[in-house]
Image (cartoon, rainbow, N blue to C red):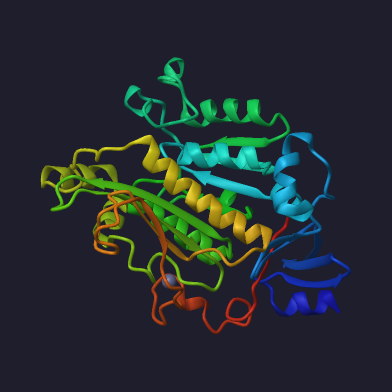
Length: 350
Ligand SMILES: [Zn+2]
């Protein structure tokens, strides 16, 4: 039966599963020429009201997580241990994310960045010290993460690119984007949408030229079937376009005054507050307390119009919204029998 169905859809895998008593058994078949290959999923991740890893590793008592297990429950910690997470960008926000995930007991991290530590990074890259200047950010971070959790599986990889394939991002349970450019942000958003992988996008910004100085950030959680970064109109098409150009064209752009802005100010506490607000949404989802915010505004200016006369920092969730009907990035999935209704994204953990 399975071979017959697989032969009818030569370019698509066919899967079937049985779910009972909290365990799942799923097999899949793919036609390759005249051969039909059979495989099985060792675990299945469910991205519904709660992020739940079915067939997660059996909960075990890890003494270093004892105080956390009381809060997240045995299954919450087991899900964290079973997760494979890609952190893209190991700078001001990404270094905080990597540290937090290691402290939380995530089982496997992929770290993507091609930059080396510079002296001007030392005010905010929390995985690096003075002796690390000149060393790759990913390797420096990995060393620190292994000090926190020697059992953590951690792979250092090159940065995301405009045009090369990134198969390493197609078999993870979560992508966290900690990049400072809309080009890679657009690529990560699309990979997340196309592979039904939750994508957590973190951005911070300081604008001292505005009438009132802006010190803030935002967190967007793109989940399968939900609105993406394009639906929120959060990507600058000009910036995205510049990233995709080859180096000679980019040099020409700079001659004409595009993409030559001096780097904005950056501080550790803004990165930390924004990052940990994002981690808080992830944990709320994993623990099953509530759905995570789709869009969270972080405001450290503290005197914007929401509450005149009540100064103070804010992390404010926006009202949930639906995906844009004609979104260029994600509307092609609407109406599909797989993505339009289901909230289950099976993923091989081979
Ligand atoms: Zn969209």
